[in-house]
Length: 346
Ligand SMILES: *Cc1c(COP(=O)(O)O)cnc(C)c1O
Image (cartoon, rainbow, N blue to C red; front, side, top):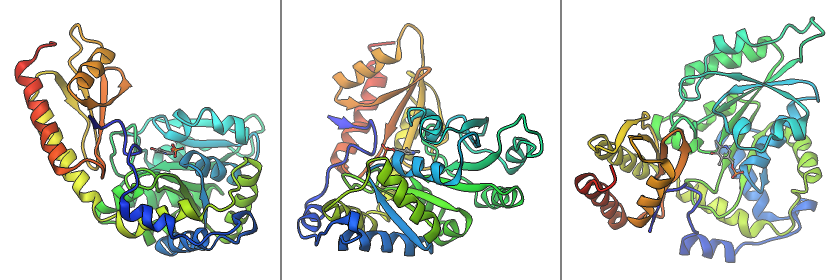
């Protein structure tokens, strides 16, 4: 089975397991886990930010960030495709008591002008106070597309002029850095807080990091504790994250090249109606609906040893990742070509 459902399905390599087994650990709630501390320092330095906090998931790092930048009744500005809005269980309302202002971007990427137009007048007591802007890079539901640095710089300017914070949901930020040859340090300058996932394309089994100023991360530690996210000998999993940051970033180009090849093949298939722009490791395509439901198509792929997910509206998502071998990738390409020729379902 070729598992293309997500880049979260990866399992630790032997070398990563070795790093985990050899980790020095302590009680991280007391701040005494040397491996957690090393991971946090390593990540903070990569981005030129003051501090970092190791958390259980990307949902937790995003939700902590939203909480620390807002007060109940404030408003968060984000794209209508964003993970913080769509896939975090209504956490913006539940954890932070904030309303959400949704922007309609270009595959999840909005402009500084759109942000400006959606800031509420602070002097009008009817309106919630616009307090935070969330950017997602790469955009998951946008098919893994990347943001333009210049637009983010403009958005930062709008935030500064309006006393709003800027948070980056960088669950797949390393895919963007590699694809667009951008610098992590530049991101560190632009954002008040950044969330990065170690358990996506980087191949660690668990964990995300929230990066920010010392002041913000001090607040974040308290919020993480309230959410039940204080961990003890977390060094065993932090070691996997450290290994991932030190070894698995450059190889993301392989996933991007493969996504491109896959998209080119899909382009020629009669069961494909259209494909989202492919910039990183995600390929989202629309199947020809005819009499075929998406669920049927997913089932059909499964019978052909391909595991994928539906994104609704006849959309199917394939995600490339480090657990797909060269042989498996070749098998996949041949399989797709074969499905196209035999065309038994359309
Ligand atoms: C996966 C993901 C997250 C975090 O997900 P967790 O499963 O909670 O780690 C956040 N944002 C985006 C864009 C994601 O793709």
